[in-house]
Structures are given as C-alpha cells and as structure tokens.
Amino acid sequence: MRTRLRIEACKNFLAVVFLGCMAVAPAGVAAEGLRFKPGFNLFSPQQDVQVGREASTEVEKQLPLVKDAQVERYVNDLGRRLTQDAPNNAGYEWTFKVVNSQDINAFALPGGFIYVNRGVLEAAEDEAQLAGVMAHEIGHVVMRHGTHQASQMMLAQMPLAILGGVLGQSSSATAQLAQLGIGFGVNSIFLKNSRSAESQADEIGTYILYRDGYDPHAMAQFFGIIDKKYPQQGLQFLSDHPNPGNRVKKVDDLIPQLGPAKEGKTGSPEFQVAKKKLLAMPPAPKAKPAAASTPSAPGTAPAPTPPPAPSSRLVKYQGTGFAIAHPDNWEVQKGQEGVTLAPPGGVLTGSQGEWAQAYGASVSQQVPQKKGWGLIDATQQLLDSLRQSNPNLRVVKQTSLKIKGRPALSTLLENDSPLQGQKETDRLVTVRGKDAMLAVIFVAPQSAFEAYRPTFDAMVKSLELR
Ligand SMILES: [Zn+2]
Image (cartoon, rainbow, N blue to C red; front, side):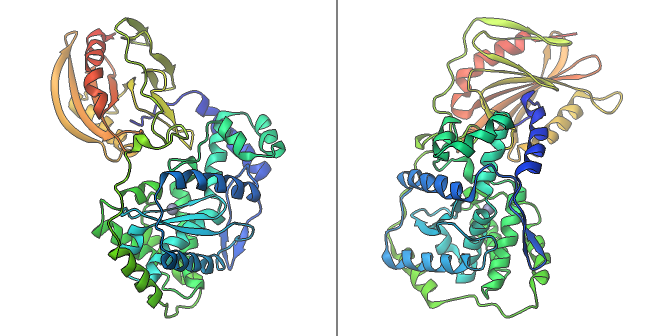
C-alpha cells in the first residue's frame, strides 16, 4: 500500500537532488531541435557499462535466453543498426539478447545491455514494431535512466558530500552499489523507469525509427497492440515501462517535428524468418515465482525474508487525538500526516524516495472538506485518493461497525503488494471523530493476511478517539 504518509527523511530529498542537479548534470545533446538530455547522474558513462555488465551477468543467471544463432544474429544486427541513429550513443557496449519468455516485455540495463522477450517478436506484426520496442530500450540506455534512478536513490540514502567521494574514488562502482544494497538482478533499480523517463524513451524510440527509415508510428502502435490484444502478457512491460499518459497521442504530436513525412518501411524477410522460428519452438518455460528471484533494491524487490511474526504483547501508541495498541516488536515511524506501525522490514523505500508498506498498519486523520460530512462519503474520498498511487486497489467488501460507541466502517480491499508479483489484502477502518475521520489501514500480503488478522482485530479493539 502506498500512502501519502512520508518519512521525515524524504523532506530533504528534493533539496539534495536539486543541489545535485546543479553540480553534476551533464550537458544536453541537441538532436535537430529536440533536446535529448540525460538527467542528473552520479555515474560516469564508463561506470554505466561497468554496472550494466555486472547486472547482465546476474540477469542471465535468472532468465532463460533463446539459443538460436539465426534469431540471435538477427536481433543483434537490427539493434546495432538502430543504435547508430540514437543521440548520445557513444561509448556503450551494445548487446541485444532474446529472453525465452512468452511475456511481452523488453528491458535495458545501463551501458547498452538490452533484452527482448520472445513474446515481443511473436506479437509484433512487422519489423518496424519490433524495432520500435528496441529503439525505446536504446532510449533508456542513451538517456542513462537506470543509473539516473540509482543516483536518485543513493541521494535519498546518503548526503551529497559523502556520495561525491564514493563513486569518484572507487575503482569498482559495482562494489559500492552492492554496499548500498543496490542489486543487479531482474528486480534491479535499473529497471524501474519513471513516467518521465518513459516519455523520453518514447521520444527517442520514435526519433530512431524515423531516422532509420521506419514508420515512426510503429512503436506507439505496438504499445496499442499490447493493450488491446495481450493485456495479460503485457503486464510486466507496463510495470517496467509505465504508460506516461496519452502515450500514442504524444508520439503522434512529436512525429511532424522530426522532419518531412516519408514513407516508412515496415517489414523485412529476416523478421518473418525469425518470428516463424520462434513460433515453432517449444513453449517458453513458465516464469519462476517472484520469491525465487534474487532480492535487490528496497521497494522494488521481494523482501528477502518475511518480517518476524507480530508479538502478542501489545503496547500503546499515543497520537494526537487518538491512541492505538501495536505489537511490541513493531517499529513506529512518525510522518507529517500520520504514523506508520510496522514490523522490521515491513516498509520498503522505492527508487524515488517514495515508500510503500507491505506489512503493518498506518494511522492518519482526515479532515473532510465539507461541513456536516458523512462517514461513507469521507471514506470514499480517501479511497479515491489512495487509488491515485494504488491503481489496482479494489473494494471487496464494506461493513459498518461501532468502535467505542462511534460509527465506523470496515472496508476490505485487494491491492498490488509492493512485494513484486504479490497481491495484498488491506483493511481500512474509518471512524468518525469530532472534527476529523480517523483512518487506519492494515496491510499484509494476501498469503499472510490470515496470520495477521488476530493482531489487526486486537488493534481495532484498542482504538481510542478523543
Ligand atoms: Zn521504457
């Protein structure tokens, strides 16, 4: 569950990033009127290659690759040709590999290590669409989105003064990253793209298509195909490459700026051969469950081990205007808008300094805007606002109850867990106070919710309101 509650550390985050930008942002690359400019980065492009190579070794331990010389050669040749039309493309170690997975996905590691799933080649209608996906990935590499993300996360974790020295002096950026807990596997921070990074990769992908003589609509076209024809198979793609909003329209608006319209190429015989070969191969092995993969960056990875079970000894937390009991082995984190009560490891920090709770509870007070507000409306308002950062939040059941004589609502919810590949169950309890509504959200992965239920029930019973 992602809530608006913030840990104090995040407050300094923006200030530090801003300073960092002024000090280290590299110069932009103008590409015929378009400005393709990599964002703030603590790494050098050489270090991009270094960490990318390391990450690729890790990734290839976790993912099966298609071993077919003809397919491999085709994808590699196509990819290398596309990189020649990319802005800011010098100094990278371009390799393109096909992952034996039916999921429609592709990803890029820093420094030029690009992976395209077999599912992409099988779903693409022509070479231009495949080239569009690959050009989008090349966009992530040349704009250095992976190490940009990692840089932001590192800034959130340590002061700029220390960071300045860390990567500069070290002979091995990877060793330093490992020390910071930044992992290299399939759940690595390098693969978590922000929406603004997605927009930029879309622009570059389209730009490359145009320059290489393809129909520049092909990339956006393929995203449309995933949406409509393969919503399930494309889930991971949208998780790794979140839709920045109006994706297709933004690309359409960009195309006239690229230059005079021209008849773009779409197909090639080599594409058809490769696609046929893949379709004729035995089905790809089923993906391993997320829990079996190597844990990496906090907030982006499965927790290495579940938190310790909640202690049956409860202690009281006294907030302003309310009190609630919690297991004595849980940690209390006070934020600006409320408090989080969680077992050790129950709260994960994400790439942008944002954080998400996988286990525990959070308490906040909501002051409804309208006078004479009702509990049902105010609860609905809160659900709407939660949905902004939890797009798959779904109400399962709502029941009314009384807490210490006050009207209350209990709303059972289903949601995506921040633990990759897992669903979570949330229970939202809202109680009418004098001027405000008290909201308690209980969170646990679906598989663990039953085990946590007695603790959550006891906490609800313990609630006191002024
Ligand atoms: Zn992307």
